[in-house]
Length: 382
Image: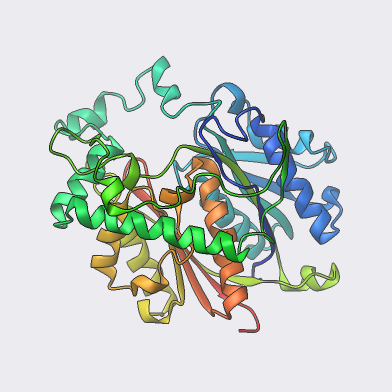
């Protein structure tokens, strides 16, 4: 079976809600990272077999197969196809899985994976305003469930005995790590600046320097009067896009490209849809079992910070070393542009692995409905 490798990964800076990227259309934002892949690799876009593009809220600006219109917005040949994928928050991580599977099957040689979400322009939950998203069957099966992620985050905190102070301590850590990474210029090589009205936007803007447990304690709960979930220990609503180029080692050599990581394994799982967000726990167990590796073999983890309780429950169940988990911060400190987040996390992960000589990296994300993706990559020449 052919191997799949990632030879390049780029992303936009993450814009906060109604911030620097609010006036940029989803296809335009996508085109920026698509063309940055071309600029960095020198490939002929006409040689791309397919574009797998993640997007969650596929209405309004993001409707009509946003991946296809991103390709056209980029000026790529009309012959280049694209498909838009929705696995909730894991959409662009699933796009990467699909790209790798296509290459490993031998059916395609050069595939772009990525995603976009412009939550300033297409608000979270807008799709639910025009119909009933779940239908009667799931509600009859789970009569006491509202399938709401905030409710799920609170239930997880209660089940795993996580106090508000513990959630806020983790969230404070996220901001501190992101601040340190930005100050060291860690993200500069992976980010493509975006020209906006005020100039060139090049730094993730969700960071709130000086965040502390004391400052977070002042925020009002969004999970009930006595709840522990609030805006400060939850992911931020954001805008962004990211793209990765997937191919075989042989094709990379022919194109004069140096692979960064090998796609080692991929897994998906389903879990309790009432808790919604626990899927990364069985997904991680599944991928480690499939790969033959242990949690101690993994040098870096990217566990999407949808809510602090998600990461802390995952840590409790897996026994992973906290120092290896989200070492550059995460969605609590920089944001979670839904359909782009999987590709953004992988871009962050593989650059961190290359910068620090880390052999194995694992990425996992909780997703609406109780599903989750886990992806394991191996640094080449580690």
